Length: 413
Image (cartoon, rainbow, N blue to C red; front, side, top):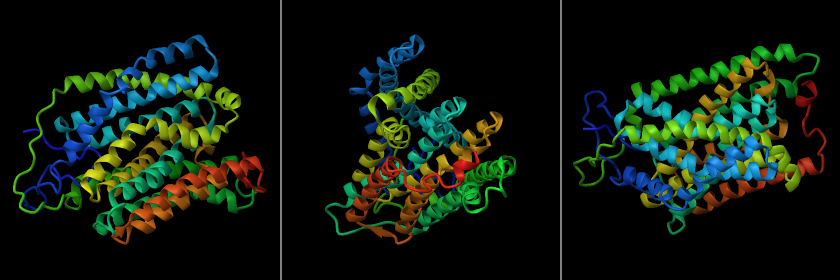
């Protein structure tokens, strides 16, 4: 019997019993099937035609076509690639161990963030790498979570969820966010004479290592010591868990093997043409990397999460969103920082002052909503509105050159 997977839904039961207790049935027996079904429908719809853009985009980058064409072709090509990778990870989850399953989701599940971060940092475009990572986190915490609240509760007085696990996850996210911003805080509030480039390097390296160690502890917490937190509440009258048919592992494995190098090439050419596209379209590079790339690149994953949460009307959305944000914060960011370490770019974890405020505001707003145990559709619209306003505020700050926009962070480097 193949093991069930969370499939980015932590409400699914653990694969093993905890403290001698038998595995619990699912709260919603169709949650896993719904996620797989929706993702499969998206992949087999119009997105299949977009796969033709993958070789075209790569050829355009190799032949040096206009930056506008290279950027748009490769950005569009990333959408079906991410969709098929997500579906393949979903199918492989039934035949791998929980640890491998989680590592797949944390790495290949965030292929857009890893690819853009690596490509931008390799080209010396530190700000683009930073914006892409922060933009993905904000997209999950504000846009996706707000959309889940709205579509699940627009016709209900309130949405109730267990604040125990969501409170723990949001607290971990808050702690990780504060840890991530320590190098920026030191540079912002201390005199430039105190922290020179060589002095801040150990702090950035220590921050990256600490975040990675926190990710390992989070895995141990989730998969070993406190798996009972991630068990589903038994459904009323339900005594059996759903039976998920075995999936031939070679098919999704082949898709992943083909998708990974394709998305790496597309991401490399997309980042390389971003500057030319931004100049031609008269759009800020920061806005493109903060909003456009995370939103378009993860569009399928976002749609699947919101749709499943609408059908389930439970706490799947909030837990899924926070766990995805934790994966980016605790694993993807340190991995990109390690590359910066190798390439001698110690300033990667020193963010722009305004970006720091945007990020912390998003985390604080989400954290405050997760500890009450209930929400409503209006709070969901507030999160979406916050996501819309924060990038616009950043664009205005650049356009009008607000004093101390970059504070003393950029002046040091």
